[in-house]
Length: 234
Image 1 (cartoon, one colour):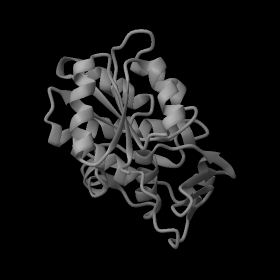
Image 2: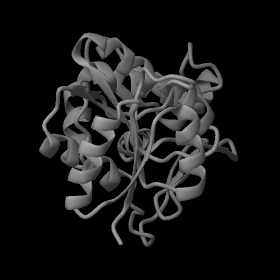
Image 3: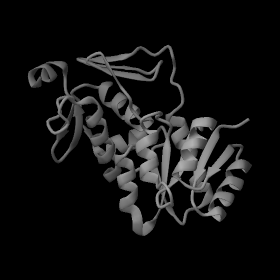
């Protein structure tokens, strides 16, 4: 049995179309017509990824994300119309991993699904944890702790932090980070990268408005502060 994808859309024709195509690609597909049905399905079916429409009756995609992100960090792809692209960015701010714009090609949609699934795959358990100052990232257990407290990151946030922690003090341009994430299936733009950075800071920084871990190098990109700099900022 293939990995399970939850398709959430209030239009029955869209649900059926996506369901049939993904099933042909070897996925197990469950569907929901609104956020309430999606919560029930997600809790009982334990999907590996979710395709989520935004504008739905009873409970929209935003409300679903707010509630579900408290429970699990399963990859979520927002599905939105071109003139509603700002809605997708808001979804990213709530914890979505990626988005696709309607109308989309089914082959592109399947590629995006496989991409977020790759990012969520368990890493090599034999890889040594990354330890930089107060940050500990263990790829073997897919966990992050900050000053001994667990931080619940989405797959994209986890990969992003891992890239930065692997080279403390090194400045990565936004283009470089997008390219590195692309190697594990990230298909976002620089603007969405900035949203992921903001979400990451909200989860690991004592004060996200004055970051002491993930620093902005204005006009260039981002870097992870070296431990001495972190201590100096504390």
